[in-house]
Image (cartoon, rainbow, N blue to C red; front, side, top):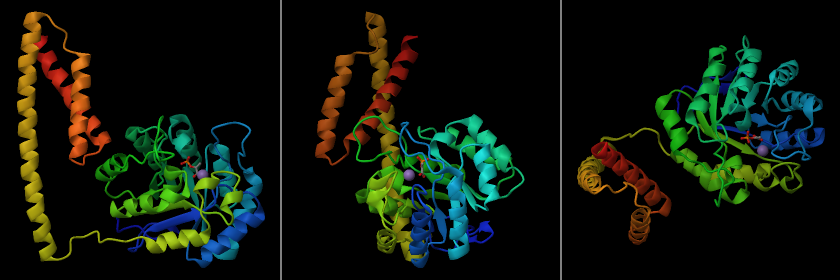
Length: 359
Ligand code: PEP
Ligand code: MN
């Protein structure tokens, strides 16, 4: 985790060995619901409160937020509980309204991050106020678009930036509402080691049952915190009801999380890990040697196909390979998704080698 992240009245600029937790309902629905949920969370030790006021909904004719009337409710939460309050902004007008009511933290939603015009408009509206801004990943798995949005906000002089990993849209069967694709936030962390990243398990899961495992994974990956929805009465929520939990359920979830050490502490730990890492290095060398040998055969096949004037792509053969490797890989306990990805990449590279020989 980034050690230089702390949260206090001034904003977020340092962290003290416990994850940054931000929670509250998907949407502000009524003054009562907002204030009561906040009091419950505050009693359980939550310091930052979220509630959506302008809701970007997929379909029309669904509840799209209370709008500005809900801003005084958040102000009341601040006054009564001392929590910091956060809401989503999607255009310049939202930013202006949020400032009028002393909102402490703004977040840019996944659909807005995907739109550079909107992000720029928001960045321009925030310029001059160093308010913390949380930037959710775009709905599509495009790390550059996510970075671009963070840069636009940063270029407007905002330094208290937090990236929020909320999963990525996916067409097809999946246990998740938005697939986590952990490799994307991991790559963001690799490229920007000082940028805090928190995970939003609510929008990844889409239902309560998976929240714990996704939250634990985020902790195991050394992410900086969780952005998680809770509602005093989730089943009655006007948006995202299946994924919201009560404040007490949230507290139980947080209690259950295991926090592991970021640092390798003792000489013994280091020695054991290094021994295993050396073995990984050796196997990786072996993998590279095998891949190169495989490509050498692809080159010979390319040569032969050129002589005989045969196309590179032979769909039947490719389908056979994939089926056969999947059966074998399953027996070895490797996941289908992994094997399909790996063999697609190998096949692509093989085509590239054959192409080089042919043309
Ligand atoms: C939200 O946080 O309620 C929300 C709309 O999230 P996202 O932008 O990630 O869909
Ligand atoms: Mn929501």
